[in-house]
Length: 264
Image 1 (tube, rainbow, N blue to C red):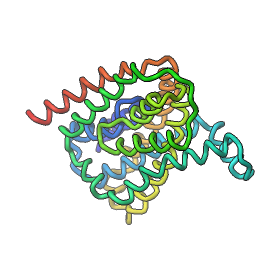
Image 2 (tube, one colour):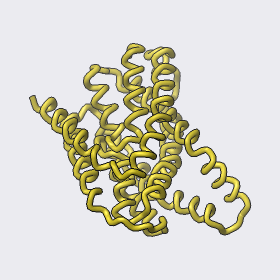
Image 3 (cartoon, one colour):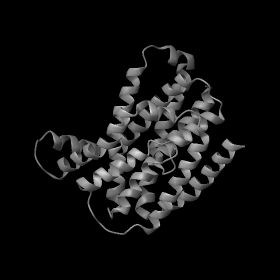
């Protein structure tokens, strides 16, 4: 992987992680288009750029995260403690699926461009349907947290947008927009941290990193972090204004292109 490929893929990961267009799908498509043949090197690159976008969420929501941690260790039942437990509950479905079906999930990320295209069409439909979501002002409760967690589980498929699936589901459940996006962005921290930690344990030596070289990894990681910061803040404004459905047009176009490219 060259430094320019790393830069483009890092920017792609950072921008699409928070926009409802599927970062996993775009990263997979990017790897195919660049003809990256070393699965171990690409695996390491994935860990680094996902860790970078994880940190961008931490930076944007630092005050919220600090509040939640402080209140959790006060051992008092209050709104912040309840919210933390709801975040933990939302991570249960994807955690179970990740542990039980890890190999099956990883097999989906093996250049299956037609599958990515089809799942992007599913994302497009989901985003479009948010135009008809009820406009209520509900809070997240245990039931809705688990349902949104199930939506996050479906988003392990390359091409299904995690943020698109979770925010759309929250809106369909009548949860107020700003609460929906706050819960969606914070809920990703637990499974992403857990998944990356387990993936790091899989790297038994430095052969993979040395085969790629440190420069592409550093450039890709920095690009993903900076792009993630911008995209995260941008997405906050988009959802509050109710414009998430417009991304369905983009997902439709990219999905159809991927399918046609894969077939022909």
